[in-house]
Length: 263
Ligand SMILES: Nc1ncnc2c1ncn2[C@@H]1O[C@H](COP(=O)(O)OP(=O)(O)OP(=O)(O)O)[C@@H](O)[C@H]1O
Image (cartoon, rainbow, N blue to C red; front, side):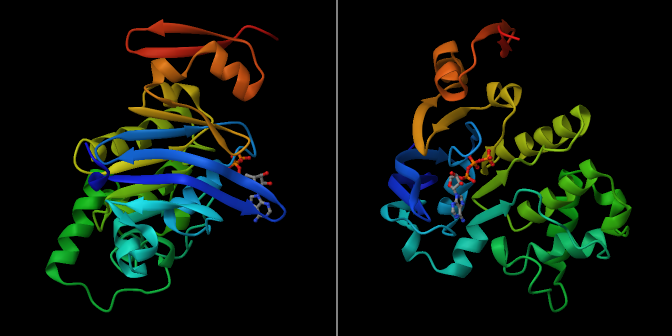
């Protein structure tokens, strides 16, 4: 697969006040893959997502989207191609689920919520219904956001993110505050989307989630410490270097379990 179907950072350096949040980062995320970014607090994970969206300006290097320089992709097109679920994003409590999902068809991405649709076309209506079916929130269509559980809210946020069929969806710790079952549900729906053309890039602290990914990137102090298949990246050496913790890696079928060997 070439960079024509990828979202990539090349020699990306981003400043955060007087220090560097990212330094010389080279990563490539592909469509049809479930990618995970891991790393300790302050490693630069959220900054990398923001830079990939064009929300954090590079001091050096560049971001490329589907083979083009991100700076050459117009804002409206960027918003259509890249969807974003920000960390701890508040959803409008009084809005009904169907209306909220429809907003994803508007300006998209970071313009979400600002531009409600002026009357939906039949195509739009069926896209909204399809996105709600795919994330299993259709039965909540007429409920208000305030009447949903945390897991249901995240699935509604995912429906809004995928409704316009973006090339990539970038999610910043989407399973935070979700119980095990809700978290597995969210990942399951995301995986179904990835089986199509979507590329998912997810920031997480969850090793179990990382072990099920197609591609893992570990950041430390704003740099890429390791990148590749989970079995190559999730090693005692990398985990020790990134998190300063001694671990054992156990294999259970397809999955890797990262178990600390110290109290
Ligand atoms: N707006 C900002 N102004 C100054 N420094 C910032 C800003 N945003 C991020 N930083 C710094 O950049 C570094 C990377 O932050 P970032 O939020 O990307 O880390 P992270 O890996 O997502 O962390 P966490 O796991 O804690 O969410 C940190 O040292 C942080 O303090």
